[in-house]
Amino acid sequence: MPLWRNLLAWWGGLALATALVAAEALPKLEDLRLDAFEPEAGEAVFRFPDGRLEPVLEGKSVGNTGAKLLEVLVDRVVLERESRQAGILEKVWMFPAEERGKPSRVQVLSLVPPQVPDPPSPTTVTIDETASPPPV
Image (cartoon, rainbow, N blue to C red; front, side, top):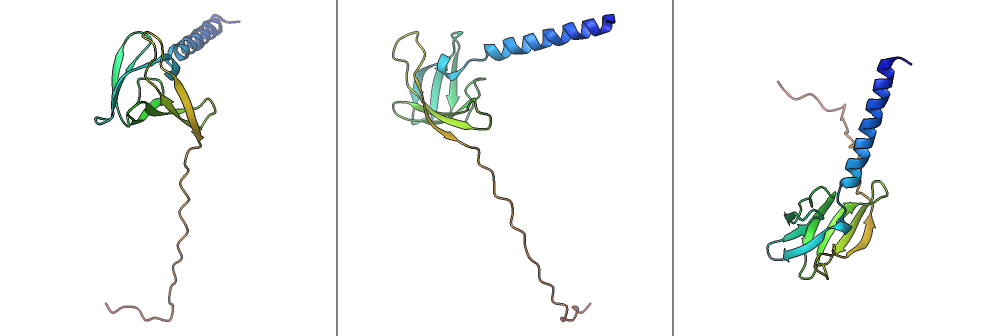
């Protein structure tokens, strides 16, 4: 096998291993803590496993977890994330952490298939061939 093919195979294996490690390193909602939230402001503060705090407003993404904060309630927050089933969205509740240093409890509410807009209905145009053309 030529040297360039060996190098290409090695480089491809290295890139695949790097991608797998990077995907594994992404935090999941189940690893986060809901530290604080303010329903009137529509804001919640999440603590990541590395100790970093991130304030998030309603409608915004929660770090690089793939989840979006939908609503801040008085005792929990509502999030939306993509399920393990491709193309399916999950709505979940996240409650404040019950113990210091422990992640918050996450409860799946529903699986919502993505909404596909209805195709536009064809329009019908009727041409009256007996009518005289407009004057110029």
